[in-house]
Image: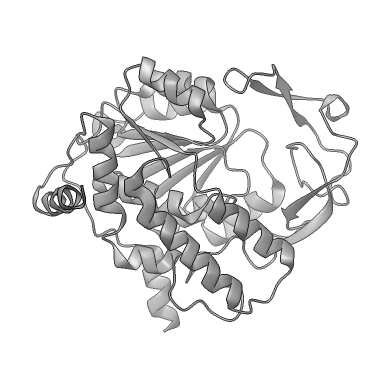
Length: 350
């Protein structure tokens, strides 16, 4: 098995066009071959010697930006505006859930007093009025997405679901054009992205409408250099949107997948790969475990809540599912050497 994987990885380096795996095992081999070959990328997300203070995301991956803090007075549902009730006591709208099935559950905007849990207080990461970016996506998933995007010649990432906003910044720092869509924008996130990543295009609205519009207005080559990360719409509803643009884009990722969604994708004839479900992903899981241990022992200044979040992200090894679109391999020769903005920042601060 290992010899076959290494041979597959070697072949990746000599061909000039992205291959299209025909089976799930071939997809797993592809991900194994491309996820561990870029040392600069791995060093950013899994530094061998983490700093003694919370890292600056311009230099090293971290769960949040400096002005974020932990609040115990947050809305328990997604709201428009700040999640901190002391800053945003009367949100313009709240997300409400329609239906109980994880596969077919719909989200909509409604009056906050009708939203589940709206009268309770919850804990959250927030800027409490100050610019703040955060994420609960584990670093292995982000590495996998960047690696596959580079392999397929993707230059543009459409993020359907922005929430904490940190992933939009990370993709932008690593050299991608980013369009970030959010149904219920968080004020502190929108402000932080404007300040820290002015090139990120922020669109507020319904991804079911905005994603097809964006892709249909692209040339075929532009669409083939685009991937979509569905982190707002979930499962079958996200797939319905993907189906409208599938023939044009390179690939898509669906966050919060589950076994039922895996079966659904198989019935659709999709060749898919999910983070942390294949033995070939074990080296990435090992990196996450080792990195968490180093970060936990580094004496980082901050609350236990931050390290608690870090632990959750590392040990929820991933439920993002990836599948190909008709544009895979059609956007031109793939480029393994993106000129990442973070490299420019690193040299400037050296």
